[in-house]
Figure 1 (spheres, one colour):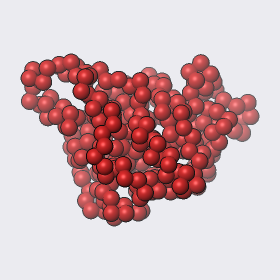
Figure 2: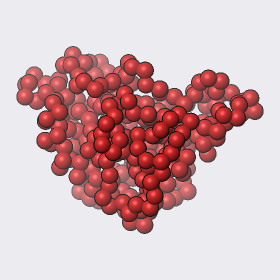
Figure 3: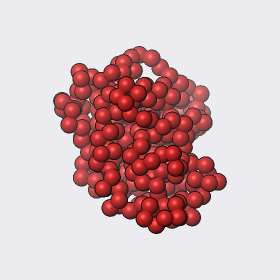
Length: 285
């Protein structure tokens, strides 16, 4: 079952034939918005706007735990995010699409980055934090639709909501060896792994952040909005091509992402209390 998390500018998908809106309260609070269940080309999908339906949530205000848990509770097994990012490399031009495969956590605030704790101990592997099978399928859909998709890129996640300094941008593209910078994929990607979901992000490069010498190339909100419309349409075209043409989301194939807790949970299940078992049993499905 496929879930889609929409980022900046993607608050609904017109092609979804809506069946139901799920207004869920989770053990971790409320998700960003009601989750839309519907059909695209006869395939069931669940859609959630990350920042809310009116974009009223800043990156650090998103309840990532509730979003991921609610999607898993509804039966989602494969999760595709859509995110606006800055490019830290010449070869990823504004308007290009990339599939991040590695993540550099540069978030210094107090986002809740794990489901575990308070009596339940687990340590999942995030050596390869995204699903390669899912990424391969999206890339395949991109080739069929004539859309260039960059692979093998590293996404640096920062706190926001301010745009970064030139020193930070140069650090991320230099010593940290990152290719993209954004504000939302951490902890989303790592919570998805804890929830045993296959996860991948379609990242839309809107700018060159601020590492270049020419000040006119430094990112601004005005610049992002001006360029974003056409790029978002390209990302939606890619997403729809993937949904319409790929059988992965309806298959029973299980990749290693779907069993990430099999050797990660340290606390014996018989010692975990009833309330904790409610949320944990959902992750273990």
